[in-house]
Length: 142
Image (cartoon, rainbow, N blue to C red; front, top):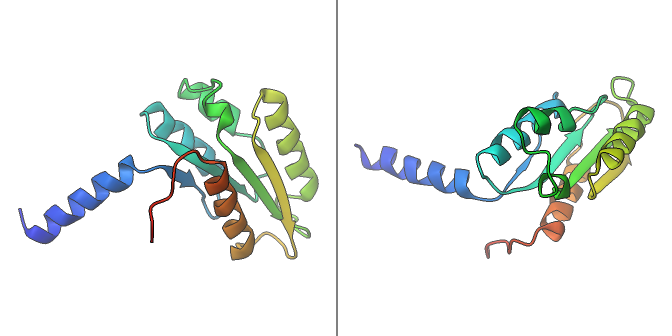
């Protein structure tokens, strides 16, 4: 095996074992399914970013992967939307927020930013900071 390939394999293995937060552009529903799939494999999930989501999919994903338990429902879920989003409206976000809380998710936050249905790095940074703050895992030193 070439040395560069070997280094890549070691890096990939380390990444897969590391605590993970899930976010997906143009498909927050994927974040829910990826988080549930990885949790079913014993991975540590420190957050689920549900940007621009217009229907609740986290419960169905967790049920499908048989991880809908207290541990999974303690994973922070961060919903965010543009105030003028017509694809995933603020009202739909509030409905998803309420659905998650009603299902038993304890760490759910919702945020709005100026704009429409778009990727906005500032709320993503806020989500990552919140995930880190909520995590019991100490972040590695830079």
